Image (tube, rainbow, N blue to C red; front, side, top):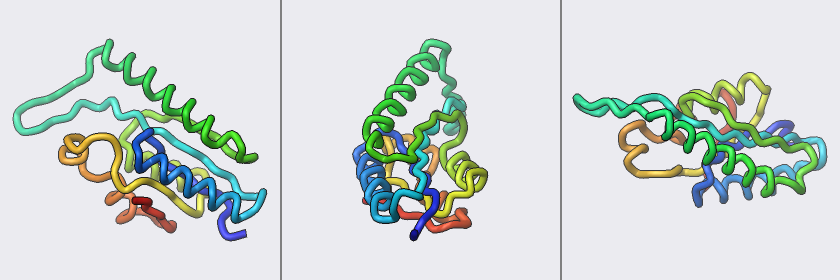
Length: 144
């Protein structure tokens, strides 16, 4: 068995779908003992750019949570054939949460897409994949 526990960051983007498909393929190649955890990280933190602070309203937060729940349900559908799979939603900073969850769960591989949803968010917040690759203590597979 090559990997025991694979963590996939999933936001529903095209690259995240490819990353999830790759992770499912790795689980199948490793055999039935490999666990797959799919995480969607909902970032509700205010964003500051220059002199402006953008904070989500209560209605925006509700919509964001509903969308996040739909993304997790999509991940559950896409991994339904994997025996030891779970999909979860967490709230926090995506890159930081991916690293923390991988360490807490004893994962031995992180899989994520090269880009997520939105160029503006990447410009303002930085690349999640770049941060994870630089700070992970375990192998990271970035799928393009």
